[in-house]
Amino acid sequence: MELVWFYIAVFLAISDELHTRILWKTFTDFYIILAGIIREAVSSNIQLWLIHEGLEALFHFIILSIVFLSVEIGLLAALIHLIVDVYHQITGVEHGWLYHRALHFTIESLFFILILS
Image (cartoon, rainbow, N blue to C red; front, side, top):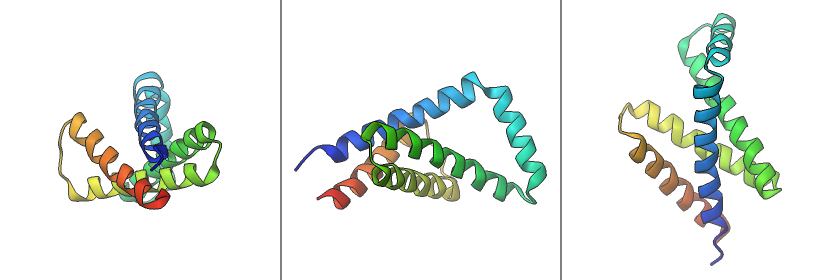
């Protein structure tokens, strides 16, 4: 079996870390202002949260589409990452960074093993 599934999961994890570092550490003020603008445009915090997750998925779509030169891989990676994030938030279980990263890597790896095998 090829290791493409592994590389996709690794680059998705790197993309998630990039998203965190770029938006939460470098452009914090911009991100907070953007959230305020979006909050004024929507009627609930749930919609705000879904827009945030959608923008994060768009970020992953762009990064993985460029890395793998494949819109399909970018779309599938963004979709599975979005689903795992939404599930993780809905369950309300709070764990540390390592648990969160391991959860994403495991689910995303299994997803791509199934898709690519």
